[in-house]
Image (cartoon, rainbow, N blue to C red; front, side, top):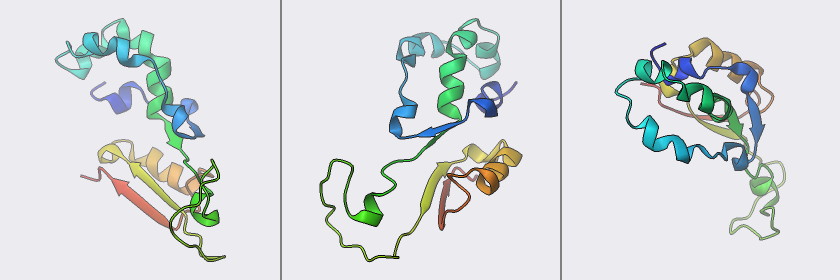
Length: 129
């Protein structure tokens, strides 16, 4: 295993939701994780199994945030947004850092088949290098 993408690649851990799907308590592991000189060194450490469940959940998450805010002009707390919208002018977009496309087949599969991704009008993809 040479990268975090392959170390924590678990499509079964894929989940969608609001930004709260990224909540975690991994901060307590950061001082120990910073000591590793390489991903291979970290992979050989027992700490990987301690963080695996949360790391896979976070790295395989799709965050859907305020999907109706632009279409309705209202945020979830009922506050009116400062811009007008016209009926039928909805634009569906997704932003995703695909991490250099290191799991290319999985990325293509998700964009084609995942119900929260495959019907978007605009793809804002970063990390394409």
